[in-house]
Amino acid sequence: MTLVINPDYIVRPARREDAEAIIGLYHAVSLKMVGEIEETLEDLLVEWQELDLERDTRLVLKPDGQIAGYAVVEDGYSPEVSYMDAYLHPDDWGRDDVTEAWLLNWVIERTREKITIVPPDVRVALRAFTHAHDERYKAGLEAAGLTNIRQSYRMRIDFDAPPPPAQLPEGFRLHISADGDAWRPILECIRDAWRDHFGYTERPFEEHYKEWSAYWQAYLHKRSWLLALDGEKIVGTCLCETHLNDDPAFGWINNLSVRRAYRRRGLGDALLRLAFAHLYKLGSRRVGLGVDASSLTGAVGLYERAGMRVETRFDLYEIELRPGRDTTTQRAG
Image (cartoon, rainbow, N blue to C red; front, top):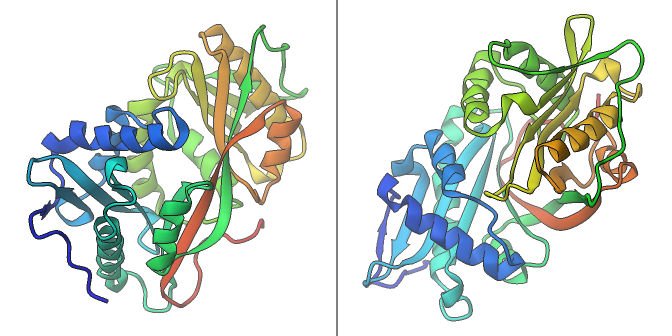
């Protein structure tokens, strides 16, 4: 079926000057869904640094210039698996049955264009996250051909008093990263750990480092990077953000990783609890993180034992655009 968008609407790629209006759309959707904002203008601008806005975004404007919808597709870790978002303004939920469907179809077709850059024997897929209770958007994804393949959680812990003290297991020492520290060994540790994370795709180190160093500079507070060392070797990381969504009382654990050869020694639990205490000293009265609900390394259980609870559930949807050899991690090694 060919979808025909309202002929009075303007459809074009997003531009940098649209950023504030688009983040306004994000906030309208998240406030409607969960009662709080889930992304900031800074988040959007950092995301756009890695995008070709002309090719990877579409903005739908009403005749009065108000945003009706917006869609974005990005490669994530590699072009084998792309990720997308599509937004329809809540004022039009239940009234506009075409704009969001058109945007979803546009994303699928845009992703198909990238198939030629992936080796011919490799599987290509497109994925999208959505709140587990967002039945309206999930119905749109399913109508576009996507299916629910997995869940993830946002977990949280609240503090009305300082967290109990914690320390690393005997034989390891804690280092809190500071200006001048080398970042490459941090990413080397993370990459080793991520090889057991669902959906991970191996890629050249320099490419990965370029992307993540820019991300770290934008988001992470170097004096909140907790590193576990065995001698001089980084064997565990807990990289924290001092606040989430401009909330100074909400600390965020962006990454908790332990090298595969060092698991089951208590490092992950110790780093997590040390992060709680560290963030509390900086003003956090609640701390959150994101995790795959079916974590191949048992991360959910680790977080629950530390006192965290599931706050929000997300569904992961996928459409296979070309069958082939799956290059992403599906099981722990």
